[in-house]
Length: 602
Image 1 (cartoon, rainbow, N blue to C red):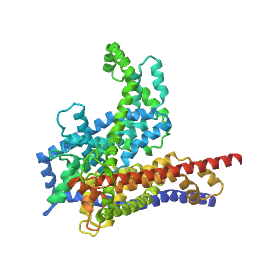
Image 2 (cartoon, helix red, strand yellow; image 1 turned 45 degrees about the horizontal axis):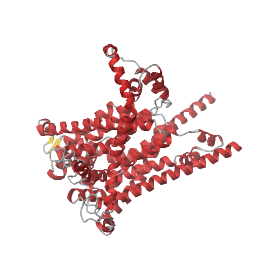
Image 3 (cartoon, rainbow, N blue to C red; image 1 turned 135 degrees about the horizontal axis):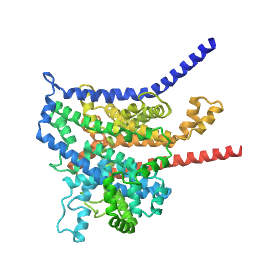
Image 4 (cartoon, helix red, strand yellow; image 1 turned 90 degrees about the horizontal axis):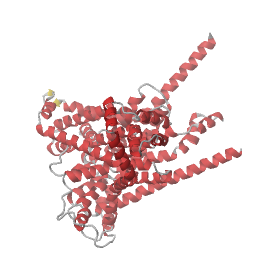
């Protein structure tokens, strides 16, 4: 009886520990999100149903009956759908090409895709203003080859918005497509071709169906990101390119119509959340605990695509068999040149802005002109001699760096809790913690502005520390979750078998092996804070002006080569961080190899 009681007590203690550990790991980020995310957004929604006389739905009825708001929403949806479609068409050939390359080439190409994603949206938008301008290089090239007789108006209108948005959003489409394509077993397409199917037909029946999870994920991410995107439409668009994010900002910063802005923000928030919940399984795929072999899963999905499901489609395919076969044979002849051409265009679209901003930084001209008539360091000298720019740079470096550290400190324990422990509500908690990646920043910034407007937090550095951590911590969580899912726990079990406790194993084995992942998490968190503009529009003050706000004012009012200097400095810092991360990874791999050799000799 006593032995049974002891065993029951031991089991109860173990159960309490299993519950307590993830709670303690999630506690820091839960406190952060409660103060800076859940409370402000709840205040935003409450403000949308308030007026001077009390609770009311008047704000919603006004925007529901407003034809202008209806057209703004329609234009926003059109932009999001069009950009998503173009990104899919441009990204698929690139992702497919990368998935079929050797590991070394694929790594290089993925780096080319990643670097623009990590580079400031302001810098890339600035580059497109130069590229698409009436006297820009694209118009000059078209004039020189005789395709046009006068410069095209491609900036400060819808054309500029679409081009800039596609370039900004393209990496978000490439990454999930590549992740899905690289898991497809090549033997499936080989089997289809061996049975007489032309390569293009095998692609449509095998590869495309098997890549649908990545396609859906990429389209969802791009569409949601476009719904509340602010920077590129604001800088590249014209008066007719007025979207819902601009409308919210206008009502808060200029008109002072806070209740209507809260209602519009709530409508945008609800729309994004609904789409987010519908596709939650695709977005949270990395938290899936099923075996990640990939080949078997992809094989089943691909196999389902080998036959046409609908009887009518099957009969139509049989009737047109001859025509389709000849079309596929013709397409198969040109598939490789066509694929490489499309992939090359996608790479060109990604890197073209950098080919512009780097020469501009060394321009000797007193104004913006490309190509520069001569080269000098005059704009570097001007930047380092301007105290306002230096103060803004120092502010961004300090507080983005502090927020990156804070993001890692709260995000890494949360990732351990989500990956290493099983508890009720795990998936909803994960979705909540990564939701700032999806929720439009303009909504989050307005909610912080309303929640803390009467406190000294607005206009202080602490406001930026809070906002940067809120948008940086989800990146740290996503990177760490992916790293922990790939982590081989054999060495952890070996350390435990030698008598090492959990904390000792964590300190001496787990964290050192995860050092490259930790570095990546911190780099992503730093860059997302350093690049932010939207929070700066609502939270800046005389003693708290980040560098992106200086850049924002310069682009809107002056458009000088000064931004190109910032771009070069940013690229240098980014390259140094990436090299540091690669060095740490190489050093760690060498250490692991030496340890494995010693263990083998032992």
